[in-house]
Length: 373
Ligand SMILES: Nc1nc2c(ncn2[C@@H]2O[C@H](COP(=O)(O)OP(=O)(O)OP(=O)(O)O)[C@@H](O)[C@H]2O)c(=O)[nH]1
Ligand SMILES: [Mg+2]
Image (cartoon, rainbow, N blue to C red; front, side, top):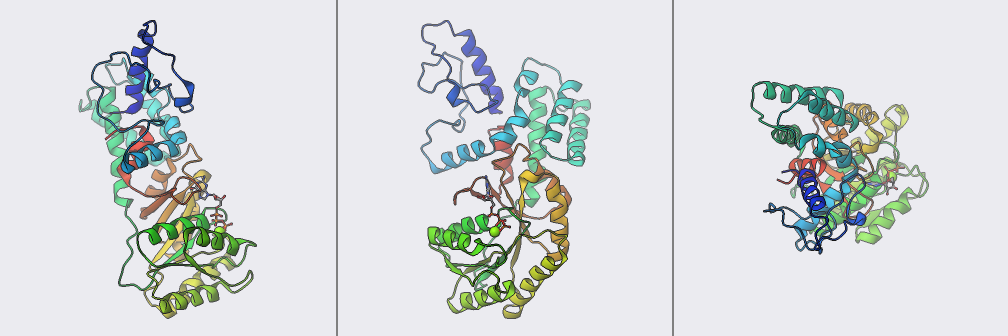
């Protein structure tokens, strides 16, 4: 069931009932930009028949942590969801037949959300084929098929980052271009693993940018995680080498190494990060155990080329896609998946420590399409 269809139906009923003495005005504040306004929570509700049991809507109080998480991911991905679902309800409801207009509208929305031409065409071709075989009986069934198709595309890459307890420490090397969100992601990851009971250390391997070390130290102080650092201008590979030695000596479970932002076109800087990788392997031949590439979702299709080049140079083993909260182009996750097929470990949906979420395909598509599983 899609929340935007249910709300749209409910609002229709509310408008019909708006002259009733029980009805109260709809409030703007509960609606997200671009979404039809929801009914005030404590207003007497007109009778609209059975409402399916569903997760809470934004703005509703939630009792359980699971409820809070669900509601919050939906609100974090609001921009992409709005661009994918806005106005779709009016196009779907009241239609008995699936027509070309609806298929074209879905195609345009997928393209605008940066899902990418190839993936969009593949999805539309699949839906069209199923319509012509009469497998999809009405527009709502079409949307369900779209939803399932999108989940199927992402499920193979939704692979969590598992900390191997036999590695002491499990070394995570974090790479990416300037401003992608590497240091912030490391701060969030440090907190996540520390809360999970791991002994975590961070290595301040960005010795290039002024204040990079302080930024990591501030995260360490905030989350109670130790940071191994030297000053700005120190040799990055040397800092990371020393950090691994210290982490081994202290029996750390996880070491996460920050690196300076670099473009894949900057040959010298790419060599530097390759060197970091090599020196880690001198102390532990199996390290780094994860090369985590951080990609900024808001830079759209440019992220694709970067990812390919970083992968070729460094053998990326996992991705974090950040800033999905600030963009209407969250469909880039599908384009990245098609191009690379690399495991997506986490998504970043804000600047706070708790705004790093393990990537779960169904939960992600639920939030994008306002779907309630
Ligand atoms: N909205 C939002 N902002 C984010 C997210 N992740 C990081 N940021 C912000 O993006 C900006 C850059 O983040 P950094 O972590 O410094 O990025 P970086 O890759 O370490 O940058 P360099 O070290 O300069 O290469 C900061 O203002 C972060 O707060 C996210 O998921 N959502
Ligand atoms: Mg940084």
